Length: 128
Image 1: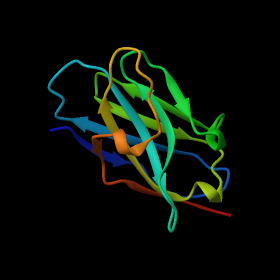
Image 2: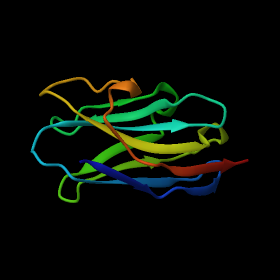
Image 3: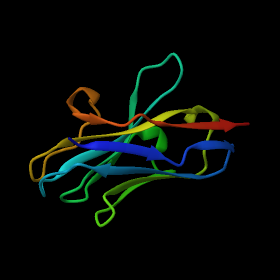
Image 4: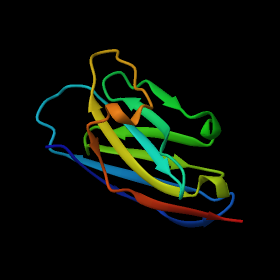
C-alpha cells in the first residue's frame, strides 16, 4: 500500500517562501504515477495546486500559483516537493499530496476523486 507523508509546512509572512515535501513509500512497481499537491482552506473545498507525471515529468499548475510555485520530484528519494515563493495570505491552507497510477503520457488531472492515495497534510499559514 502506498503511503504519503508530508512535511515542511509552517507560518510565514506574506512574500515569504516554504518548501513542502511528500515522502512516498510502498510502491511495488516502476509504473508512472500522477502526483499532485492539493490544498484545503477552512470552509472551502479542496483544490489542486500542482501536479506532475512521474513518468514524463509534465507538470500542471493552478492559475493562481503559476510563476510562484514549482513542483518537482526526486526519484532516488521517492520524494515530491512543492517550492512556494511570494506567498500570499490566500495561500493559507492545509496542503496534502496525492497520487494515482497513470498510463504513459496520461494527463494528471486536478480531480481529487481519481487519486487513490492521499497524505494527512501539512499546515501553511501566511500572515500579512
